[in-house]
Figure 1 (cartoon, rainbow, N blue to C red):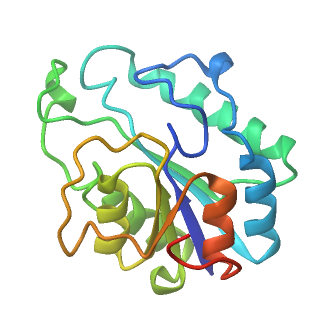
Figure 2 (figure 1 turned 90 degrees about the horizontal axis):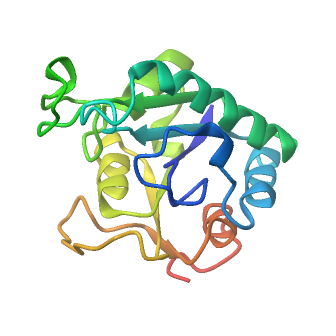
Length: 188
């Protein structure tokens, strides 16, 4: 099974930093069509999202379940479903002791992708990671996926190294889907 791993904020849904309000979530422009095209091409859809708001005390871990339900509703409106949703609640500078730590799941570490792949038998070499920051790219590359960086203003540091060079650049999720499907130049 091949998958497209998707970052949540700024990639799949409109960016709303540290928001745990499911009612405020909206798919990014063109995301529904992009997801339908990817699913139609045989890719499983997976969300992998850092949610350091838990570690920082902005919202409780219990807020993640309604967030997942809302994501599932949003993609269902596009006629597709998510295979899985993985959240990392950790941050080394957090204020909530049990979540204030370095972990293997917080992107740029590949733990969320590796865990989902193991649970579902996903072929990581045949899969893609799409995100709006280079930490997403690094997580995908470290997991063995190809990667697309959405150049939509999310990245602010622009530190490149061998792990942080995407296979493709795109302005939005629709163009990212075209790159994944080989319909557009990888660096379009």
